[in-house]
Length: 157
Image (tube, rainbow, N blue to C red; front, side, top):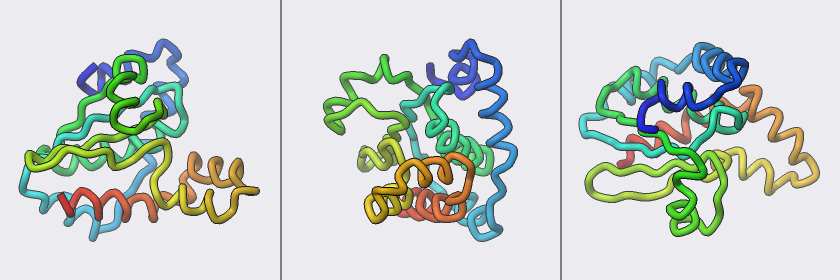
């Protein structure tokens, strides 16, 4: 399922589709982020292994779609967990979603598995608060930090 539309339409539950679109519409980037994303001059291909039913995927996919709206050189393709099962196992040893792969023509690599690094850091530092941190991630509490993390990565490619 290569496009965002196909990703959305792979989900029969219309509530999950609506949730995905609602999250995308809520994300607002800083002016600095907008400039950095618009200034990316090379093509970056991202494979997002994600499912609309997954709240963690909805959170991450929202950033990707907003980035691709700002810069058409950021190309995003989607795959289901089932379709990418072997690829996930080979690349990461696990089949967790979302998993994001980036390819800028020079290198191809996994840059996110299940949670952004900033969220993983909070979880490792406060394991007793895992559920609360996961909830905060899903509700946007870490969006600014995630924005910075993802932009920094994309600009580095």
